[in-house]
Amino acid sequence: MTSVAFPAKSRPAAIPVRQVLPWAIFGGLLLMLAIYFVGAEEGATSLIRGMYVHEFVHDGRHLLGFPCH
Ligand SMILES: [Zn+2]
Image 1 (tube, rainbow, N blue to C red):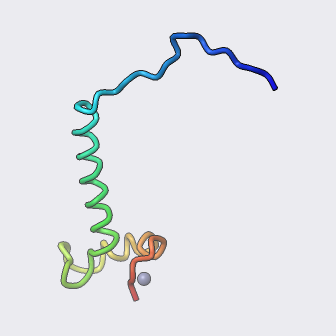
Image 2: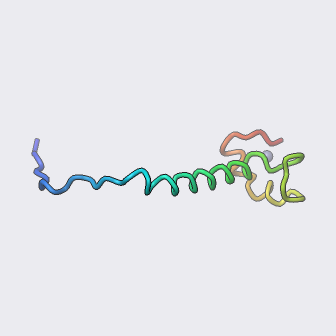
Image 3: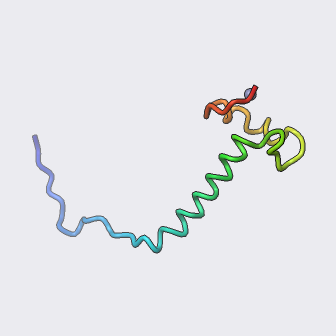
């Protein structure tokens, strides 16, 4: 077995939570919106008329196991 020597300055940089938190919230909101459109954009909970969004995300809907038909 070989040993690998890392230089002393190769420690990971610390990222403050205050800098990450707004991006984490923004990403979480986008994720929730995507989950809504894939999982619940149909019938009574539909925001957009017609079946366009439902048909567009139909394969993703089945891939994620949301009930459909
Ligand atoms: Zn389906």
